[in-house]
Image 1 (tube, rainbow, N blue to C red):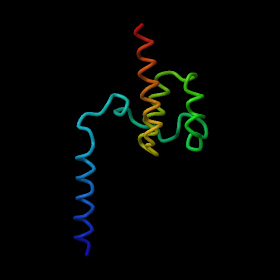
Image 2: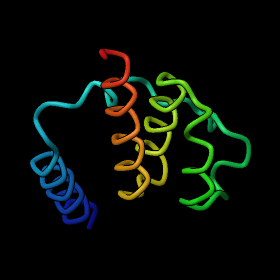
Image 3: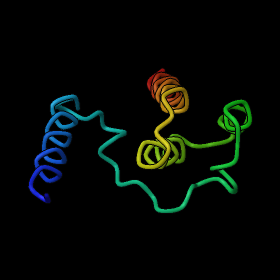
Image 4: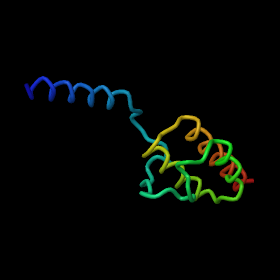
Length: 94
């Protein structure tokens, strides 16, 4: 019965691959750190992380985003990091 499970697994993987965007954003291409860049990050709430963002550099925010995307991948966290990176990039070009 290994064949049906294998076929199912392959079908699931193909579906996931098809749902992924063809081109990754620059933030996603960075290798995700194995440990979270902030102490106790995995237990922090969204407001707790948001409160710490202003103290972080753009590279640190990118590291957090990569870590989040590779681990919990919570959309609201990823979106917050993307917004912060965009804001920091805009400020650096002014």
